[in-house]
Image (cartoon, rainbow, N blue to C red; front, side, top):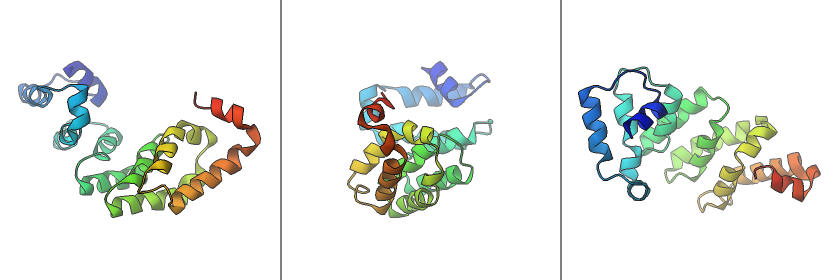
Amino acid sequence: MIKILKRLLGVQEKLTVIDRKWLSDQLKGVSLESLRNDFKKRTSVYKYIRNQDSGYDPRLLNWIGSVDVSGRIREKCLRDLIKTYSFGDENRILLRLTDWVPEVRRVASNWVVGNIEKLSNEALIENFEMILYVSRNEKSKNSSEIQKINSLLVTRFSDIGAFKFSLLKS
């Protein structure tokens, strides 16, 4: 499990005894079911990585922080993702349209309003499942952002037909 985490986090050097102990403590009794039911366990990695002086990838750190239990951390990481945006980050930004903290939703909303039309067809197709999720979520389903996204999808993909559209992400 430690090898998997090292690979995911991009850690090249050997873990110190303290790192190993911290990871072992975090992983005690961990299963997929326990992670699904314990938000704090799923998100505690952000604070640990942030406090290390190892060269962790800031983009990965912001991805992890964008689902942190703290709204302040989610907002900070979302703003950092937007500031240093690169292809693939739209997934995390779109997800925050469903956030329970209004300011986090507002930051994501501002990005969507200003940038959704700049996304390539490839990016829209890659994020189709996330767009579908966000469009069905109570906090965002009737929002102007979802209406804008839906309008964009109709404009970009209306000429390819329903069958071909259904094959795009299958």
